[in-house]
Image (cartoon, rainbow over all chains, first blue to last red):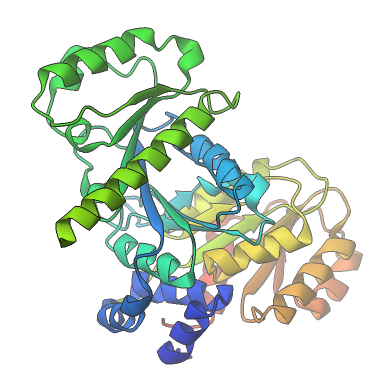
Length: 256
Length: 134
């Protein structure tokens, strides 16, 4: 069965979930159609706030997203979530297991969760994620969240396709030597130390020290959270809002 | 280019036993498929909505508590109603022989009980997924 791409685009722009879902699959599987789809939806882009969430495996990214989505829904915002998990380098298979942390939103019409496998990309996302973010934007979601594969240091591809990058770490991640290394810490807009009940003060101090020594113009805020206990999530959300305002401000300045 | 087959493993109803579902999820991953798992105790509506959002080729239903005659037909009906009648629906768990004929008539394509092997299930999936090359 060949898909009628024009019909699917029209469906996506008018909010039909099945159409969006099918276009996301086409974006993943059929490179030759991607530019045509992006051209068609380009007038409808630019409304969504795009947030990238990255960090080490098991630091609690999915659970944090689950709680953040709860706050966003409480404010009436609709949300699209793209969860990327690794494909096996051996078989190409994958277990896409992030969705299960977001179970409370399964039945919410305002939340659309899509799992994607990395399919051989090593930057923390798959190559279709950029198009997927655009499709969620065109579909009309107020916020689009991308959760990357659990990464350590080098997976910074995400920062190029979102407005704000949130780095999630957990206590035990490493000492100040780890923090001095080049990579994700240089390009994160907000840092959350999740599982803070395990004792996060040391890591927070190290991060602040290292960031103060660095050459970044603005030092990202460091927030302690406990996603499972729903602690610190409001603070984190407020920082995401602050970043959004900053981003809009910068965009305005750039166009003048 | 052949794309990976996408599979949703789902557990409807009140059954909390998911060792089989997890084993199958890992097994199909090792067969090169992209596998999503819903978690236990899912409603009919949530399972069907997840099928839509994840654009799966295959839905594997696992139930060991005896609720299959109630849940499975409801899921099949709702899939059809929502325009996803093309999804290959398989079942596993404890499904008594006398219930199998009826479930297959309702649209369950095959039932894999205890003793089924991963390779047999994977082979069945490969043979029966509709070649919808998107």
